[in-house]
Length: 235
Image (cartoon, rainbow, N blue to C red; front, side):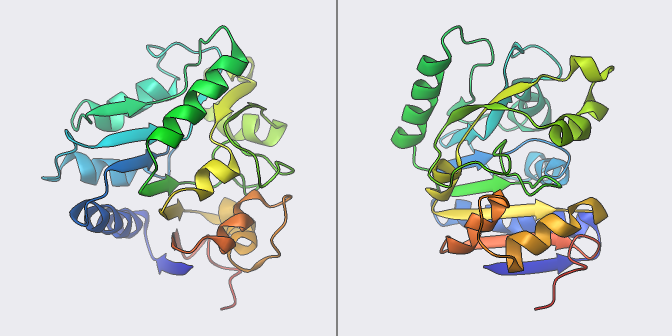
């Protein structure tokens, strides 16, 4: 695991962009993408770059259950705004938040992941060390699944909604094993709220109570964080 500590989010975005650019130039065909505030700077750099993704594929980590792709709070909408409108991919896959049959949707999305092995997976991390929507206690062997979001995750996400009751309580997410299948992973994290998550990810014991700690077992992970998020690291 390589850990890159930067002074600002702008430096972090540039470091993540260099990982994407290198993977792209080395022939990466499938990019696993993430939402939230952490990757926004990276997506701006990708939008303004000369990289052409029209012959590449993207798969997203997750989507809220119950939101249509046109809903401004959905991750479909976020990805269109942040990246896809400017940099369309040959195919962009996300879970269907309006799927009527949960089991069928989980099976469909996992099949997409199996048919499109991820070359580079982008991750953020929650304050409780969740990656994707894999909350503490999620089995390391878990693949794509429907998740009941924890109160801490709902609390963290309510800033994107007008009222807390509008925040969805469920989401579809790649599982931890689905994430670990990626050939390479880059995780970005900024701010003091991520300090314990980054400590657990990089230096803590590998335990299902710290979902991101499984990344210690992955052969090719880059963690990019600012000094505030890295403050507890000792190595």
